[in-house]
Length: 230
Ligand code: HEM
Image (cartoon, rainbow, N blue to C red; front, side, top):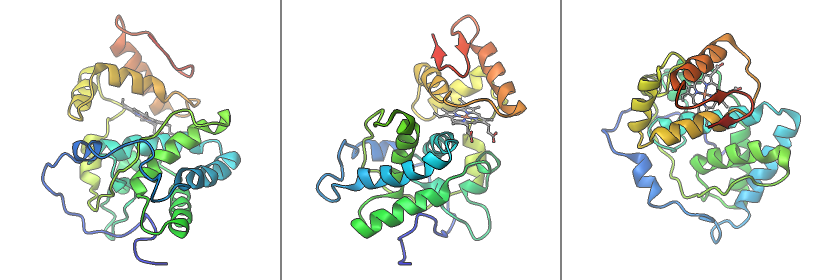
């Protein structure tokens, strides 16, 4: 396989200062970024993702969470996909050990490389996979994804562990954590509600939900599994 063809590549793990990758990327994002360079990009990505989600509905939760965890560490740059020879990349951090679907992302990348070599970033593929996997059951795209993200080459398990919100985080910690990413109270509430597309599966998760519900008490009524926040 050609170098650079797959998303999962080994990299040197170097933390590169405090450049705001998210801010740098935001300037270049737009709807239909690949309209001229690879017009069929989004259709190809959707086709591969839908094929897999049809056989495994849990992938919607996996890809939504993968996108969140990618964006929360160094911006949405696909750094969550990078492999480390010493198992010290983001994907090796405890919060990321239950991520899944990396092989599907790779399959999308391979299909896109066949159609338009070297054009579509892995970071955009992660964003599209989140949208397409969640949209699958509705048979149509639920939201537009602005594209044009560039892939990073740095990935650190320590940074992921420090920056991805912990299930034990209080409301104040979550608020501080989100504000460090340029996100406010409304973003925290909307994102916390937006990901209730699934059934609770573990005590840790249920505990985290209850803790968050109690933290919001008086301000927000949280009802899990039905995406109701008000
Ligand atoms: C606000 C702070 C958040 C905390 C503390 C948190 C924590 C957690 C924890 C502890 C789990 C269980 C993981 C496991 O069992 O291995 C989980 C699962 C999940 N989280 Fe979060 N999360 C947060 C925000 C978000 C956001 C903003 C999204 C996406 C928009 C998201 C998407 C998901 C999804 C889809 C799952 C289910 C994954 C699966 O079924 O494999 N989370 N979260």
